[in-house]
Image 1 (tube, helix red, strand yellow):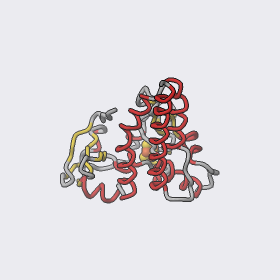
Image 2 (cartoon, rainbow, N blue to C red; image 1 turned 120 degrees about the horizontal axis):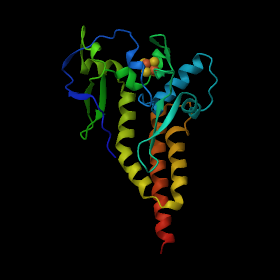
Image 3 (spheres, helix red, strand yellow; image 1 turned 30 degrees about the vertical axis):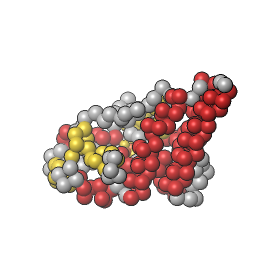
Image 4 (cartoon, rainbow, N blue to C red; image 1 turned 135 degrees about the horizontal axis):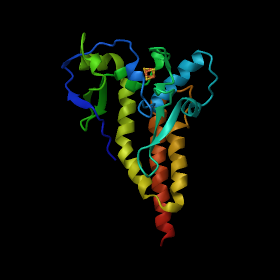
Length: 229
Ligand code: SF4
């Protein structure tokens, strides 16, 4: 499974890029199925919304209320994107031209106009989003400094676990026997988006859940192999 990000170009960490946020809200409109809400984003959002009086007991309530699933692979490999609303497909958190969850906005929004991707050597490469050309006039920002400010060690660790495990999980899901397919999808959704304690740090739970998911998928294949003999 490969992820292709359209309208981007590689950028070095030392490169200076013309960028100035005009607070026009343009990046937050026409965003149907395009703003990813990963599990760490949802966890932070849950805490933020709780702090603002929203009753949230479980992480999957965030996904159910504020996001929608998008199938990335026919195996059932799914991600969540923020919901949008209205004739312009505004992000549901857009209030006028402002983000109403500024302190807890998803990683993709925090990093904009940059995108981070893990590399084989344990580092990160950066891409520059080329959409919204009117933003690329005015101030200057440096990719490396931007990332230092907005992309925390916790974000990096989460992204690495997520991206490193994605190809194997998708492959295992593709290879589970038909009789186990529904169960594999249920397990995937449970370990990726649901089985988290909001009172404990997220990244370690995500690592543990990823290991459990991989073990469960391998077990399904093994059982089928044994049944077939
Ligand atoms: S979460 Fe905030 S910054 Fe991100 S698209 Fe929605 S309104 Fe815009």
